[in-house]
Each structure stands twice: as C-alpha cells, then as structure tokens.
Length: 331
Ligand code: PLP
Image 1 (cartoon, rainbow, N blue to C red):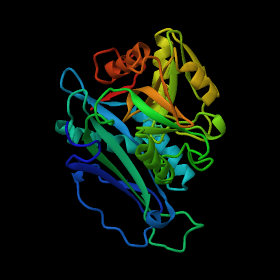
Image 2 (tube, protein in one colour; image 1 turned 30 degrees about the horizontal axis):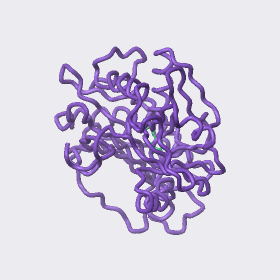
Image 3 (spheres, rainbow, N blue to C red; image 1 turned 120 degrees about the vertical axis):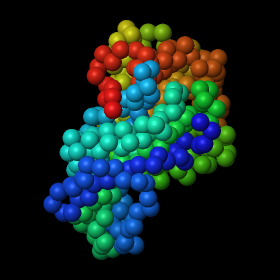
Image 4 (cartoon, protein in one colour; image 1 turned 90 degrees about the horizontal axis):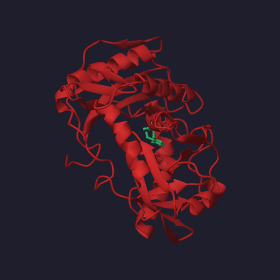
C-alpha cells in the first residue's frame, strides 16, 4: 500500500439513524457518499461525535476476520455514554460492522495491510443553542479504509518527545475516543515534529507517563512487561489489553502500575520501549527526548522482545496462530 494511512476508502458503508426513540438500520450497506448535514448540526458545534478504530485482516484461506469486534463496540458504547449520545447496542453495531466488512472484503489488502474499520457516531440535532443539552438524534455509520503501515517507513525505531507540562487531554475524557482529545494533542505533536524531528509525543504531565497522541505506552525486557494501570485519563487500548494477555501467555510478568519519566530514563540503556495501537500495532521506540536531551533506548533498534510480542499479536490477527481467546470474527 503506498497511499498514506486513512486516505483511501472502501466503496460501501453501513448506516443507522437514531430518531429520538431507537436506531433504525435497513440491514443493507449503501454506496459511500457525502453526508448532508444541517449547518447547525450538534456534533459540529458541541463536539457530540465519537468513533472507533478496529481492523479486519485477510486470513490464510482468503477469508477476512475482524479483530476483537465486541471489545471495540463496547468501547464505542463507553464513548457514546460519556458524550450523552444514544448508546448503540453491541449487537446492532457489530452487525453493521460485519455487513460493511463483508461488502468491502475484496478491498482488504493482505498482511501487513488490512481493512481499517471506523465506526462513527455523531449527534445530528440542528440546534445551536444546545451547549448544555445532548443531541436527541444521531447518525451511526461504519466507514472502511484499506490501509498499510501507520508510521511511514514500516517497522522502524520511533523517536518520542516526552512532554511533562501539557496534559494529554481533559480529565475524564481521556478514555473517550472523540475529536477533542486529538485536537488537544495536535499542536504539541506538530511542534515536536518541527522542533525535534520526533515521530510522536509521549505525554507525561508532572513526570507520570500517560500515552502518546494515538497509542499506548509499554516497557519490556526479557522478563516483564510494564504499562500504566487503567484510569480515566487515557484510552483503554484494545491492543494494550491484547498484549497484556499475550505477554502472560508467553510467560512474561505483567505489571500494570504508575510509571514515571525517571523510571523510563533509568530503563533506557538496557530495556525496550514500544507503542501499541490498532493503527500502530506494536511500534518499537529507539529514542526519547527528555528536556531536550536525546536518549537512546538499548542500541536504538527494535528490541527482540518488542518484535516477539508484535509477531505474536499479528499472527493471531492474520490467522497464522490459533485464536485461543476468541478474538477473531470471520465474516
Ligand atoms: N490511545 C489513543 C489516544 C488512541 O487513539 C489509540 C488508538 O486507537 C490507542 C491509544 C490505542 O488503542 P487501540 O489499541 O484500541 O487501538
């Protein structure tokens, strides 16, 4: 795949409308087309929009399997509830995803490519006086995008700028997959790219490590895997949860706890660091920038444990390893 991640779209979408009472889904996909929205649409003014990011992978027998569909749809419910949008049943949203992926199956690239799945939920009330009122109507649609690597250049060691003063996002909304979270990280990330040639920003307000703009953070060595314990301040990654399970299966000790920048700096000479996410998969980190100092992680190259975890995860996703945890939904 040569097109940048997220810029190609598959031909079919599944759409459901919430009219104030219930969701209506025709049960049939439609051709991808522009939306027609009133200029006063609630989502455009008051941010009542959330989304998911999942993937479907080509399997060895040619079929396509969605990875951890139920978990992604449960997180969509969590985001919808926090935004006071009508919460779609997991059964409905899952069926819509299955229908969209089935219709777009031919557009699914083989590994390392995949079909990215973007369920999107927006509040559609035409009401510009509703800052303190939720949208009673909503639109849910499932958009698909054939993708390759998220980070240009494939699996290569990333450079992270560690930001210790600006918070990752607003309190309580870190676990909501909504545009405001990304908007808040954007300026800091652009500055880090321009000033430090960094790939991503690792947010660590007051020296406590959170996550980057679009992925969770891990440290690993030959014995253990460490990541921040869940709280409301950051996104509860499905990939994060998968890695913790896989790491346990492979015999690593798993630690979910607070992690400081000081600990990361002390870890750097011997340990490994990586990011995890649906888009990022397992992305090894080679350099961190702390207070302007560039610090190399290990020898600066992707570490053996990071690559081992990446391989274990992707093998389950693409069907070359057994699905022991029931994570694949074949369409
Ligand atoms: N953190 C943020 C802010 C994200 O946008 C994402 C990507 O979806 C993640 C973490 C990783 O989550 P997941 O593994 O569910 O894709």
